Image 1 (cartoon, rainbow, N blue to C red):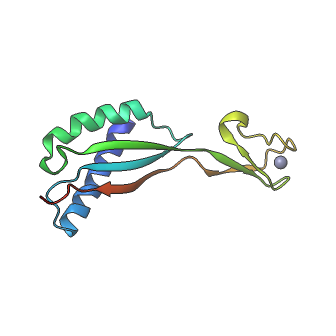
Image 2 (image 1 turned 180 degrees about the horizontal axis):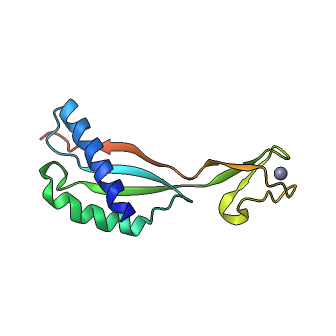
Amino acid sequence: MHELGIVFHIMDSLESVAKENSLSAISSVTVEVGEVSTVIPDYLTDCWAWAIKKKELLQQCELVIETIHAVTHCDGCGKDYDTVAHGRICPNCGSEKTWLITGNEINIKEITVPEES
Ligand SMILES: [Zn+2]
């Protein structure tokens, strides 16, 4: 499953961050998921819940998913438009010379750590 690979990738990144900063726990991670990426947020959350059970560092770590709005740029008229609503053909001029500016990415945006007590 595609989502599981992404979960492992996120976990690897968090583990190296934890190592570099000598963290013993991470309380949440915010991941940005593009609107037209192939990731299904519900699957991602399910995989996460399953995968973190084996990692002491991430036992309490909540996965927060933020969606990035997909935007396409048209070389024909130079305008940007909503990818999900219009697809590959520019709604302004009908050109097919278009490319996705944003909306296909998966990024780790931020990590929070438990407050020291
Ligand atoms: Zn156009």
